[in-house]
Image 1 (cartoon, one colour):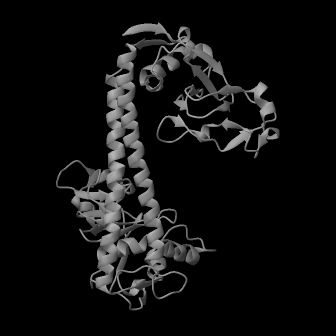
Image 2 (spheres, rainbow, N blue to C red):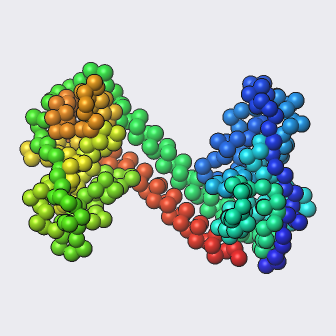
Image 3 (cartoon, rainbow, N blue to C red):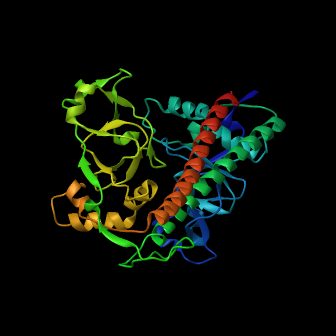
Length: 395
């Protein structure tokens, strides 16, 4: 690969802003696209739209960009490159990088500027100075190693396909998350109704209202003190369930990061597969199903359905609905309660269908959760693969 001083191969210019900017913002469709950091996509490298436009008379105080130009956020904490897919103008939070002599494949250039190798150069050059962000001189003084245009094109296309897959799975994840939220509203009764709007075929009966605490056992967890004295590496220790063990996606707790010695058992609360635990923080209040034996501290509530009144998957989904959270908030309003307790949760009113209908609803949401988890895992796997390949496909 050929080593080059980057600034000798491209034009680098800083953006600019007409002042005061609010005087130039316009709703006129003939205004110029005003590119802000918020217009950059979370996934992908192309800027395709802007939330705001500025009046054309502001052009002389800013920097115009066109499709095929590359822009780089000049924040040292960000420094991520994007390709313009539209005409627009950039403020001084961006650097324009324009390859007029076509020395680079555009997709390759965008990936190269986002590598850890480039970021390391920026940090090294700025070390000990008062520079807190990127500028044209700093970026221009970096050294880049570049293959032939043909190899650049192959590399750029490869990473473009990886980015497209990440974007695809991210969109699926977001769509399914929205679908689940919608269906939770439609498949559980709302506004005092005894029936949900959407039901499976064959179910027509009213849902039965119950006081939740009369149908299950609710107990608070506990911690042996000091907890550090009970933590153990012994494989025979008891699984110690902490908030950090709860998965970001899905409802099952399958492992714990720590264990405690068995003698701590009398000071805590034991849980078993099939038990449901609920974080007692008012800001969280999310339910999980235990898939392992373990112990819970006082940040959790145990909910055990000994009489099998509920389908477990249904119960877990029901406790996570906005209807339940609304009851917690209403009951705690005006009090000094900042988290859930057994009395508050027990005093909630729940509406419940037959076990057969519960099972249908629980299974439906379980499948939706599995799909959400699948797409999240695919995103994580692809991001890790991309990070590895960026380290190994660039010098």
